[in-house]
Image 1 (cartoon, rainbow, N blue to C red):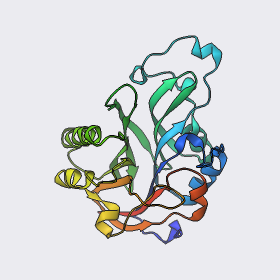
Image 2 (cartoon, rainbow, N blue to C red):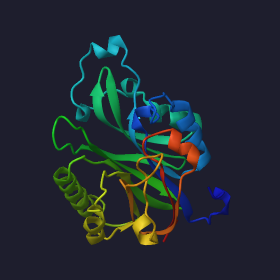
Image 3 (tube, rainbow, N blue to C red):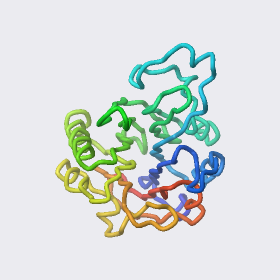
Length: 260
């Protein structure tokens, strides 16, 4: 990767990555190597999906939490992203999608810059596939940038409904100012590109004329992960190094952006 110090004062690096619940394509537990890779990326904003939590302690499990939107206490939602943020001294917002005593994961946004939670939404198409949208506001170079992290459905009809809902939310909830929407869209047909283009957003890899393929990690053939921007100029889509291919079933999506 290019040295972050080569970037101008209005340039920054954004990374989106499905962490595959902290396991490698071969099924190994790789929380620490993922943390080390993110440290080397020098991200100004990291959008993480499937950030896995450890097994819920018995004392907390017995209290009986409800759906993710009920907002479990922070100590019960100590997850992979929490450990990464602590180790790298980054600020953190979390959006838990699946919250059960033995199975908990969700979205996370991390940044070394001031970060405030903007909201969490359950956008699941059905109860068998929990999906969410997480929003945050980051202060960078004296400007506020809206950050959205999404994990969308596996079926095309559900994805289209989720994309339309997100586009409508942006038009009412964040109609102006710089914005980044990133995540695992599961969108190998690129349906998202025209939908968010109509909302005034560019998909970074598409705008730069590169494939943006991130899945499967060992031999990327599909552009499942996306990053849409408004009020920021795409400078570069960076191919992840081979080390990252051993850490998740998705490669990280890495973009250099310039605040306009």
